[in-house]
Image (cartoon, rainbow, N blue to C red; front, side, top):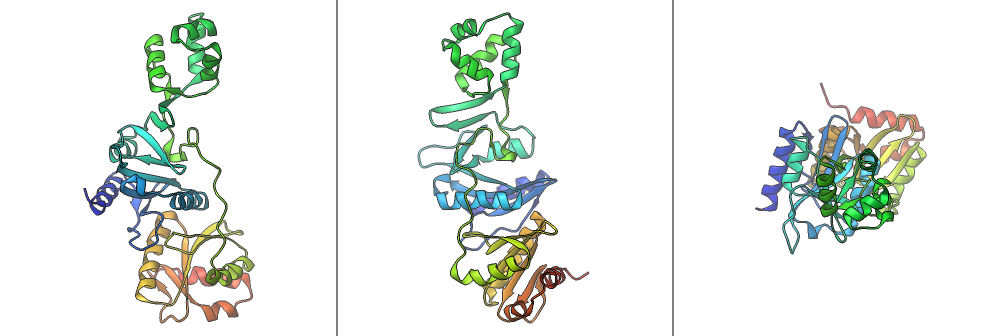
Length: 319
């Protein structure tokens, strides 16, 4: 299956599941392909045939964007270089959860979250330690008795009851032994934080030299500005008064800039943010809801409230 067809299939699946899906980010560089929202759940999705193409820099960017926008970064893919991705399993690349399309379908359409995740050494599941302890005590088994039945140490059983995850084989043996479910699903929509192995959200990158002036003006106006590297926008800026996010871009107003502004509008609609594009010269006020502000206008604004008002007014779509 071509990547374009895969993106189309995943997008259609999300729409069938009740998600509002943004236009595809058909520009480069791009850290994600589409944004999708259903209720409070916002996803930033990278869709790849081979997930080995998902590199560390893109993973770091997606994790930062997830933090800025209160979104979950997710990769949907078919395979690695060596093998197909297994259905029902959550994988990880650079701290981002990875699902195959069948797993995504079960999660987003059927409401069945995965139970298994891949980590160094094999496949693992979340053991509900409280349930395990209750089942053991109901049988009046000691830690040592259960350890003997499983063929592990007493300390290992104690760790299972304290929340340590187990291999699929051990989980199946426990569930057969106690004749009931002892596992809990992987919470992908919270980034699978309970099982994800990785560093804390990486710090903001330094702004590029041509971005520094925009960052300075927005910061002076009371925005907390987060520069990006591979997103279709230059910054995510939070208005510290309203706690509203604004996606920003800047360049000469070319056909490519207009295309980028349209994508920013679509993403903003899904992510519930405003968007503004700073340009050298503009003959209109907006592009599909992305406000256009000339740099000269920006330089003339000293009042932070005036800049906020201008961004709001330029970004309003005509009735």
